[in-house]
Image 1 (cartoon, rainbow, N blue to C red):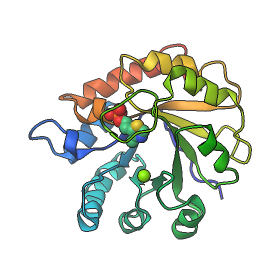
Image 2: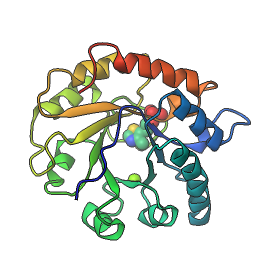
Image 3: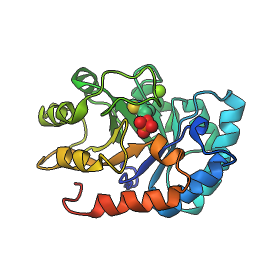
Image 4: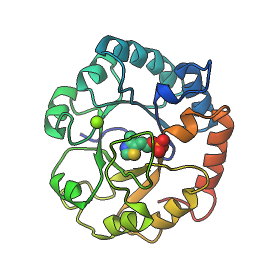
Length: 230
Ligand code: TZP
Ligand code: MG
């Protein structure tokens, strides 16, 4: 069953450890949404299950107010408890088939891809979007795979071996993305007929910002300036 279409153009991923002093995650997320964030992923590696659920419900109240989908990272049980709109998994997490069985047909499922091998292993998976990265090295994920760089990203997009996945599956790119390098991501996304990078997924640049609303407005301006994303 088709899920409602989602605007992935400015995808915020949280990390409460990176917040400015005396700022709650709830306030930071709300300000970022006011600036133009279109999807929020709750990625909180250090919380207990009970804390993760509590935080999820709190953030869900905010995202619902703005009609922005909330995606839970890693934990299908938390996604269910929070009644979030979706789940994001990597290779070490719940597999897509099981996640789909548990979540049902209406929820969004996103998958992280770090290289071509992982991409080909996704054949036939019932997922809704891909998170591709890291593009650049980042301290936010200390154990990350080697960064793809812009040429690696372009290479991956050009292999066209996304067979078995929905054509035009939305792609968000992650890892060290900020307003200073967004133009290179846009360049990598250009000229492709089939693959569609819809926008950046950003952690530290937005979560650690003193003024996330203003920063997200700047992201939006850059995102919509020509050449536009797919
Ligand atoms: N997956 C690949 S890189 C990354 C994740 C979750 C972290 C990206 O964080 P930042 O701060 O936007 O570089
Ligand atoms: Mg994970």
